[in-house]
Image 1 (cartoon, rainbow over the protein chains, first blue to last red):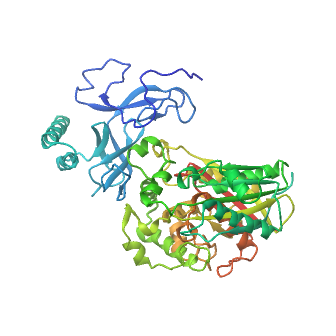
Image 2 (image 1 turned 135 degrees about the vertical axis):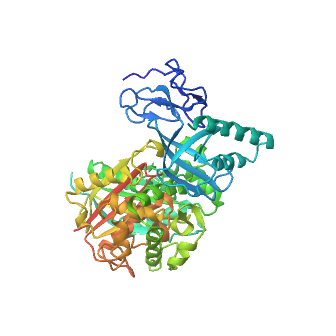
Image 3 (image 1 turned 120 degrees about the vertical axis):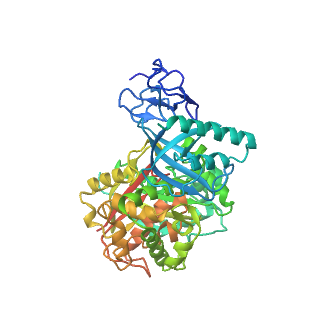
Length: 174
Length: 374
């Protein structure tokens, strides 16, 4: 078993990481399949057992192998969700949390703007806002709610974040 | 080596206590020694999840040993988060099995009610994966995620999980040492405030002070430890494949049944880790006491009530007896010992084999212990 330190892997909290390009860091991006806007989530892959972890882990939790950096698509299916009404210090109540199984295989812990009408197995997209990941349904209203919720931000920041998100949605819609 | 037996048990009243944690642990420890007719054990095993942060005490095994007047007895402390008490019993069991000692006193306890609830919640949350904690995850939040996934798979309703809390409060009302001694109605549970959707306040166990103790020994007594098993899982919820049950419980149950040489069909009474009401149902299925997906129906039909076919949590469980973290795993065994020896006044059931299941953290280090009456 190799115990060599893999490059570019951050371990430990808070490990939200950054949104990176969809193509794995190790392979050149194919402009035909990975459009410039397609965000993905930093992850790590175990060559030995095939497990993918997001955010990336230094060592595989199953067999201790050093993991290789990779990325996974920033969308998937809701495994479960909850709304916490007495969140810890530093978090606004209610705090919406979800566990999403990303299309790339890893399960991912994230925040959301709300869980009203959300169902187990629902398809959601994930975006980072200030390095914190949020899930949202693909609707414009969902996106608006997500960005409007950010209290700390200035009005202009909210509007520009929402505009960027909406632009992504329009690009993504065939 | 031969079998390991329990020869005495005691616990404090659970709830909001004025006494210090060492005082509570000494009360339980002395009670168990007296019940066992033993003056001085060969060794002392202590369990407390986090006395450093809850009460500001360290080197806690020596502290309790000295406080108990057992300063010359070798002592150690065991910690596996909220299942520490069960782990301490295992350490004692292993020492006896190895022939290192003939008698061991196990004392578990915790004291938290003197701190504000957000502070208690923060300290308990330290047993959660740091990344998930950085997203605001608390124990109720993770329990809410597991409960929703399990309810989605089994079709169990809010009413199904609420019936568990009603049953356990009814049992607690008959236990003089329980934290809550008031029965609650189904409406009270269903209408209590949301904590972590779908979990409401009355689905969650209280913050409790208390301690429990047992004496284990190599000489034959009326109650034998027939099996004891541990199971584990990833610290991070996001690494797990199964959300509709706990791998750690399943693994622990398999190990305990294998050691005992019998299966769940012989179990006549169980103490399960209902830190959150749906965990009792999940744990019934994980330990094989209920077929997969059938636990809710068993509880709804009264099969797990005190007068049912398989009474579960006759003590009131974590919900009503209370959950003094490091003490809980021991308190479960105390209850089973009393049940198997006819000492559970007011809530006595008829059983020859008892099962205790303890969950550590969000099910990262779980234990199943089987006791058998001789």
